[in-house]
Image (cartoon, rainbow over all chains, first blue to last red; front, side, top):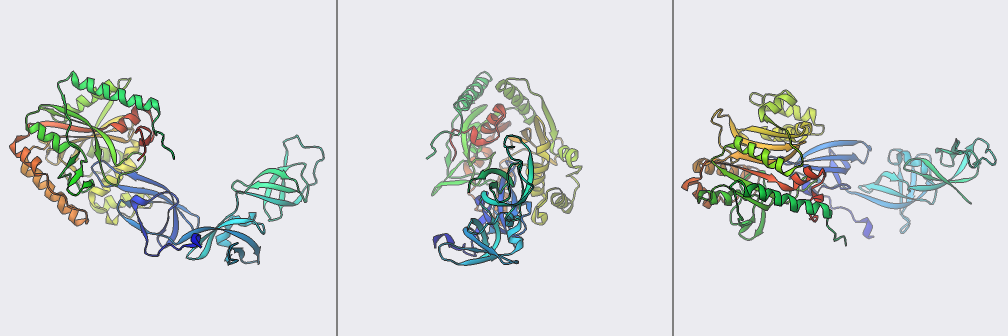
Length: 198
Length: 307
């Protein structure tokens, strides 16, 4: 399983290897570098000013490092997994190749639970082998489970109404859509994209 | 494979025109163009500048300074050079390990006269007449941070770093590192237009002469445009024994920070001992000057290719 190689625990990255996307340990938590800016007065000390996301909490913060310092690599991997079901406490995912299963708690899943539909593939972030984050596909197709009755023939007007989808997400949809219809939604913005023919 | 230039054809032509104008400026003002080797057995000892080792015993030059001063000591008169310079580990939107310098030396000038000439040069290179502000390093810190660097304690400087720059662990920073961080992240972003920062504290004297008016400061200046550092210049230090002392201190610092120690440039020191005429010199980053003149944000946009 080439994609499942663990990062050796002693690995570390020096400031000159910093780039966006790099996963490092900061104050005991796995973090991803979002931005890295090299600053240096011509005759002075060089610094790296970095913006990082704490992968456990999702918080974004700034850090300053003297150039030449290094940070321990975080044992973090992003893997595509199939979503199986929610047992009330955990969301269960499976590696399609090996059937190996992983359970993610509410903190790891976060807002992604609004877009998780059984059989769909999501990206699961593992830290030391345990899920700490879930990124749903950019687009999902979900059934409308509740909305006000549709206005027949009103396909041209721009009006919208709230609709509750099968996952519990509420999105704004055009007035003509009915309960039971399938819609395509952009999970990054929560916006309705189109109606999907069943 | 993306093989195309990172600079547009227009930018490449702008660079050619810039070089023509620079050469025209010096041709009419009695300054000789020279060309010194990029490879040398010795290199810059400054602990904040890392050299690229090009061969078992050769370094790529971090600036043409030592070689040009040997020419001055040999009686060249005022000289200038357009060349590439190399510094290991410097990469960002404003930094490249390989970059382009215009470096020149004026015999008989001090740093103030050289700043006057820089104003004339830059006005001859841009389409408009620019205003240039001059502010001392000390006043800059007073104006923007309310700090008197002459009397402030290290602990107070560290506190300012931690409080004003979130995510900074300032406990390990030295006095000068605090100053470097504050000028880079807090002060320079507030500087507008062309600003000469002058009279640096002695701890940042580099190869500058100590000021005759106030021996606490060095006759050093830097030129910024909208916070982007463009040039660094000095009234040049001509005392060989003081220069040797600064090199030795550099290497002690290098030892302390586990950095490689570099062999002293004995030929340069001998040239100083033989007699460097009183002069002022400055290095101007031409890639960054092009960024300013063409209003571009990234150094890659003004260099023909990415590294």
